[in-house]
Length: 306
Ligand SMILES: Nc1ncnc2c1ncn2[C@@H]1O[C@H](COP(=O)(O)OP(=O)(O)OP(=O)(O)O)[C@@H](O)[C@H]1O
Image 1 (cartoon, protein in one colour):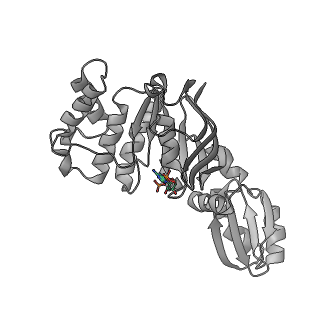
Image 2 (spheres, helix red, strand yellow):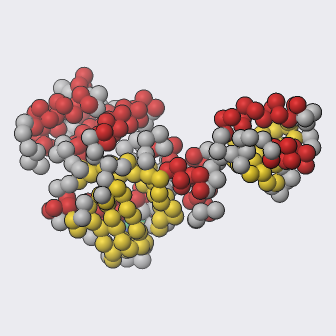
Image 3 (cartoon, rainbow, N blue to C red):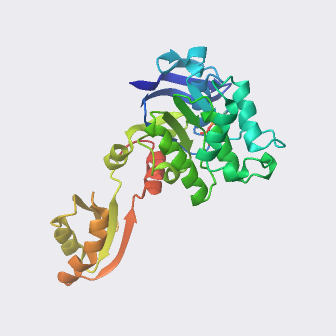
C-alpha cells in the first residue's frame, strides 16, 4: 500500500524553482529518508505534502487522498524544522494544549503524558519549555506531531545538530512507531544521521530527485564499499586481490593504485594486510572510500548514479 505518491511535483517561487518534477512513492509502514544539501527543496516538498504550500504543477497524494484536502491532512503529523513553542508553558501543558487545539480524541492530558514518557521527557514535563535544550525541544516537536496518532509522520530535520544521545532518543521513539505501522518521512542534510533507521531513501539535488529506493540498493548500486590500496607492486597486488574471496571487482585509479569493490568491507579490511604480507608485498596505504556520508556527497555531486 502506498502512503505517499507524487507525480511531477513542482514549486516555483518567482524565478526560483525550489522543487522540480518530483516523483516519489513511499510505502505504508516505511521510514523514508529525504536527503539533500541545504536548499535542495526538502522543506518545500514537505510543505506541499502537508498542504501548507500549493504546488505550481504536479500532484501529491497521501494515502490516496489529494494533498491539502482535509482527508489527507487528517492522516499527517508534521514537525517543522523550526517549530514555535509557547515558551512559558511546561512541556506537559504545551502538548495538552496543542492536543486540545487539534481535537485529539480522548484525554489529551493522558496522551500528552504517554508521549512525554515515550520521548524521554517525563522528568522535564513540568518545566517551562524555555529551559529545554535543543534536543528536548526537538523531541517535544516530534511529540506534538505524534499527538493525533497520525498514519504519516513528516519530520523536517528532527535530528539536526543533536548529540548522539539526543539522536538516539529520537530514533528509538521513531522505531517504536513503525512497529505500530506508522509511516515516517524524515529529512536531513546528513545521511549518517538517518542511515541507522531508514528503510528507503530519496536523494534530492537542486529540487530534483537524483535517486530513490531501498537504502541498501541505492548504496550498493552506486558501489558504496570501495578501498583504494597502494602496495609496493600494484600490478601484483591487483592480480592477487582479484582472487580474494571478499572482493567483487578490482580496478586501477589514475595514480595506479588498486581500487577494490567489496560487499564484505569488514572482512576485506581484516584480511588485506595478511594477504599482502603472505605474498611479500608491502602495504603503503589503504583508504576506505564510500562511507555513507562520502557516498551521499558523491551521488549529489555527480548529479546521478554511477
Ligand atoms: N517562500 C519562499 N520564497 C522564495 N524562495 C523560497 C521559499 N521557500 C524556499 N525557497 C527557495 O527554494 C529553495 C529550496 O528551499 P527549501 O527550504 O525547500 O530547501 P531545503 O532542502 O529544505 O533546505 P534546508 O535544509 O536549508 O531547509 C531554496 O533555494 C530556497 O531559497
